[in-house]
Image (cartoon, rainbow over all chains, first blue to last red; front, side, top):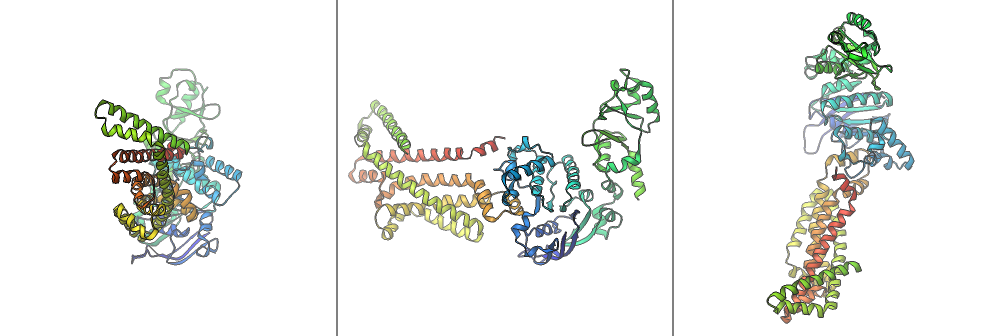
Length: 370
Length: 245
């Protein structure tokens, strides 16, 4: 889909090239993350793909076509572009911001409207609420969503993202990352993603391209990068705690089936049954759900002793946090540490209970892998 | 326009009345004479005010068109910017009398000379504000626009100018107020306006004439600044929503 051949960029007045003889191929539907310390040329490389920077040497092929021969405006209109600072237009409403590219392409009005509404829902912004607001009325996370929506609205096959989640707090970042991966699963774009955060790279990528001083050091799948770093630079970048990093690679949903814990209890379960199940449980806790399988809370041994009613629904404790099934095992670990329990309940998008995973499950995964 | 004049005239009258009441309290000399003069020659004064206003409005339109264009051009050519701003600065520093005197051999005596001199004078504030207004935009906004595939022309008209507008308008207000003052001196080369009243007052030693002219100039200046300020505020309704949040 995207092929860079001997790509080189030397900025005016500099002797050392910012990017040197770079060869890289990104397959269709893949997320390729460029990662490396600041000044390694990752952003420069990305900006050459949509020709914000003109390469000094080398070739760029997009779907086999020579990008350097194409009209840069046309090229850019078909490449979604998201930057860390987002660059929303402060004098335009969210609607007008997102409609930028369709308007540049002169789409008919009703088609633009439909597309903007769709893409806003896709990134989790209610069009009716946010459409007519100005960017200054939005939180950082919401602005990032608008930035992504604006880049995706005309359904470009390729997207370039320069640290798109860099400017938000860690919790929002993890949420945006998960949402983005969920969207990507559906839309299957070819994405070049720039970050300096190796954890983010491992989590988001199909392949990782590690860069240093303008050169490509290693291009591999995250799993290969973790198990076989090309040199000391890469292994330092990846860090020593590689087993923990592996947790970024696996989604909660992938291990839920293997774990296969006993199903949750309904609210009307009697004491005896609760007791029995508590004895069987490896975490000495049972999960309580309502009739629609929505998570209500948990019952531990102590809760049963101090019970205030006849059925499970009367004396469960609310849980302070959960993970969604598309979160990574690393997210699950963070939540467990956060709530101080050896387990965490997993829910799906609609807050339906999916299962429970424990610290032991995570240990098993790490053990199997290494 | 009529309404505006009506307003100006009312203000003029009110000022006159105010002065009258002060005058009654003490020395009736010069102030009483001025009031007397204004009420006797109100039609002449009004006519000169109109002339003054016309000179300023025409000059402002020409000056803003030229200055904004220059400001936009130099925002693209950094190397040109310092030179151009330097020239504008020099133009502004030339004493107004000297500038008008320079113009006479080129354009003769009359309205045109006044307009040309005033345009040259008012270049700096608008050129400088247009230039800085555009240059100081958040680079991320321009980069995002470019990266999404907007043409340079569209970026200029849809992004840069609307965002730089408050700064440009501040320059226009400065230029307008300055111009109203200097326009009085332009009467020296026959450009007309309230300056005529002041100059003939000086040559005849007729103080009420001078004061009447000065009051007229002040009223125009204040009214203009006010109108431009509120015009800009009203024009940017969406701006208030934006900042209100």
